[in-house]
Length: 573
Image 1 (cartoon, rainbow, N blue to C red):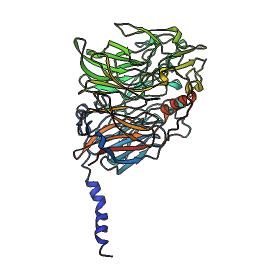
Image 2 (image 1 turned 30 degrees about the vertical axis):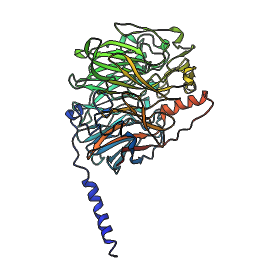
Image 3 (image 1 turned 180 degrees about the vertical axis):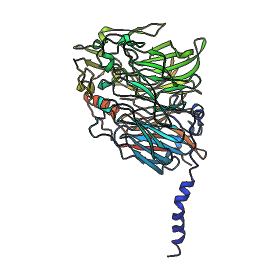
Image 4 (image 1 turned 90 degrees about the vertical axis):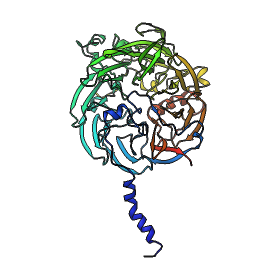
């Protein structure tokens, strides 16, 4: 061997050992760590149980964010909507992609450690081909799959440890959310309301995968709320749970957002239709319903209130409250009180986007009164605002305890037109009562919408005042991340830009052109004293469909390339 090659060969032989040595032994994720996560990690869907989407890390600031550069990137090889946050536990990173893949990487370098793929039946129709992340608990990683399975993987090897069938995908059940881990249980919720399923939240033993409890979001006759459903309509009443719940460790109560009732037209299921379009409070030990608040009854607009409320302790109009804050798809910003015993009390609500359906809100109960002229029905065509995609859809808002502001990814001045049509339940078939083509082309844009639609809004929820707004010409489907460095990050626009704002003033400070549209949940972490910002790009699902609706009414068409790419940024030196 040539003498000059010997050092190179020696270095290559040592490389694997060095790479493996770069990561410490895996640290078990405990209840205590999830309740009080270390600033350098991102251990759960929104960074903490309260759902804030906040990282205390402050190395990256408004003064230096302009130096943010790409540290590394990783192509997933998948198309469609990439929406999961990069989870990080002491240097180990985990993402999920469409088609039920989990990828483990070295967080500082992007080196792939392992990849898991759960095969799904070829005949399964993926109405929402996405996955919103894993749960980290103990020394395992938990995945909820499109074919309604819950899977436990070894965090260091990716080996499948157990798999539990949660529901029957043939009946329309599927899952898209990141599980919620607490008190030795892994909790998930069911999607599939548009197929006439009966939604639920269920918990499984983290060690064995055995079911601990199951609570239906649509009650049966004889159960509390069962009298709000006529006849046997509850059996196919919808009530999907699309997004990870939030959790109060002090009371052991998890809060879940519940989707719309099914089918869509309200005259097919007279009554309030509990607990659709609600936040429900469940005891984590038993699954018992402790409280609820229904944001709007007998839904007619596909305004499923799936986002779990943020838990924020704050002063409000002269009293301290343990609040639940929710930016609704119905276009109202809700402040609720998580009272003792799990009951949920109404505090206040006000519109954050243009809304023409609610005529009033009861100041004691929060129950809205509707304008019949903007309420759809079978054989009835109406226009309503906000659109069926809502003032805020599934992309989560964020809360910064330093600024005291709540940040909302909103779509304003955008309306829909719907015509209800008769429908009949058939197992595994769409059960919505609206022509599917009408959904995809139903955008209605007024004069204000011609100037802007997508917004990033900042609210002082203690006073109910809007502090600043950043506008986009078309849509915003961007989940938000805020940091201790007084920054706010988000994408969501069809120009593919990922942006940073001053969290106090709203001034845009930085942007980066991603390979695809960014609808992923951003996260932040630290390795060896260096702060990183991570997010997945990958356009698809509802953002892609909303783009098609825009293209149907605008003189120009926008093509947003698909393809999943994980981008990880750090400050240049």
